[in-house]
Length: 72
Figure 1: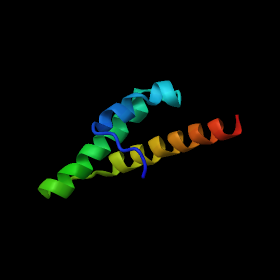
Figure 2: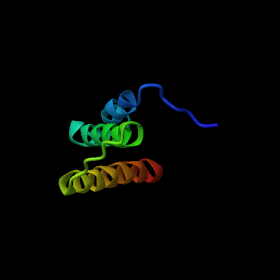
Figure 3: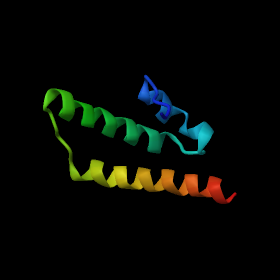
Figure 4: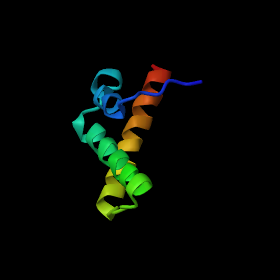
């Protein structure tokens, strides 16, 4: 079994300390997670194109930072 945080936003907020990523990344991840929860649990799924583009950029930043850890 893996580790699962009870408060996911904390995982996002430690990204500056773990991967050197700023709030422009973790805030997007948190917003997308909250949007996903609204869709899953309340049936309210309102996703715009800008949010999707921001999510792709954020995940690319996380992926790049993780790859740097592996090679570094």
